[in-house]
Length: 138
Image (cartoon, rainbow, N blue to C red):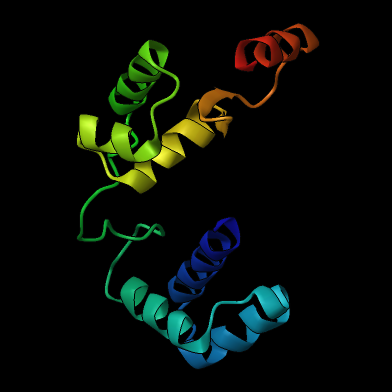
């Protein structure tokens, strides 16, 4: 991402120097090599800067924002798991009305837990916690 922003700034600079797109593309290819934007992307950004665009960042895209794994949902999943660690991802999903993939992401990545013997436990356990867990399962 950072490399493409650098390239956009270089394209913007070339436009300010009144270089054509045909002059700009070989310079970018020489400087950035295999990491260079495609010729089509170079032309698109050259045209946008020539028409007066100042921002080198992409515009916001249409579509549904990713808000499902928000702090509120992480807290809701954590609270539910604290009441019963034996809940499945499917059951948590149905209870909280969050998609299964988001619940799985929250449990595994945000909360750092995984399923062990039908129980959600932290991924990193101390030796004492492991011993206690073995005694609880028996």
